[in-house]
Image (tube, rainbow, N blue to C red):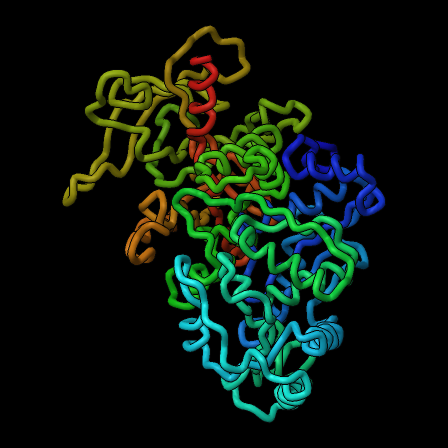
Length: 563
């Protein structure tokens, strides 16, 4: 990976480009494009494509365009266009002055369609969508020719003009390429290349009443822009013969389409249709819900662009589809934040602790390192008082063996502070719930004092007098099954506990003015980010990005041990 975060490792796409350089194909130029459809927000799978297309171009001193495939006005919105631009920029990539839309080429696409009609390679068909499906045949049965396939050129030109002028109803006619109804590839059995859609377009308004299909607009748009290597996901492999046929039939510049395996992530769905369902049916709060695999959701949760680029490099580029463990993605953010996220103390489920022999009015300022992995980040001062809060789970009245936290009569160290001993437990008379612990401290054991006294347990804490109340949201996988797509109804395995909201949390005072989007490691809890949407000046909200438990690191260590 270069300093700019681009993948420089070899892969089969780079090998193809190297061969093209040797043969001087495309004049030793590399020009790629990222062509999203603006009908939803981008997800982590798109991030892989973004990193690949922009990375391949950067590695080979080439160019990469951003092009919006806006050929279906019924599903596209300006909101999606703006979100896509923001996501690509956030990931660290720049398209310069090369932002295009398929709609930029509607006139040329129409002229090329007329050219195909004139050369006898396209015709207007009156079959309904259902009839076209029936005539197309199956994988084992050849298709049947449409009764309208051999219309005279002049009749086709007239009908196509009238389609364009809005004379016919939607679904009554389409323009089809005339290829081969007996082809073993169903995509070549006279595919539809234009359909009637009486819908207003977000850029062209009501000018057009016909719109091109993606399989027709895509290769021509690539050709117009001078794309050399048109990198697509594997589901377009069967469409490549049509891509090639259109360019050859028109006799225009011919880019090379190359397919790679899309990203499939465990406990996640990647279908834009399914993600839209989650949003529209209220299973999540929006496209940027921190549980969503969208780039905006990952950004809001606290993932960094560096971690996502690193993840995309780590998974590599393959020709065969596979499932990637979400633990790899989590590992990437831990690795990225380990040396740059400040360590702070936060108590998520508070239990009050009173140090009886500590002076009541005294406030000590204790020195705490910001990140032991990065001494250059320096230190901060943390106030210490007679009353503090610890985690409720850090105390056990009847501790099991090897419980090295606090129990009646036992000692622990308070992080950055003193060794304390639990002397007394206070309970609610009605419920029996523990409400308060009373302890004593050893004033000779202050951290950094040189005391030789050692204890096995160290607890984080916050001063009761100085603690800042915050809301904390603990996120986990949105689905309970490893592959939700295999279920009859993917929504049936939505995890009802994917978001736990804690409203009584306390953090140290250094976080009182934490900036939206800033990231921290809460000691022993994981990495957290200040929510950029719901946080207000007086009510900070923290999203857990990921816990500290690194499953992927353990897997990799086990694999290395085997070797």
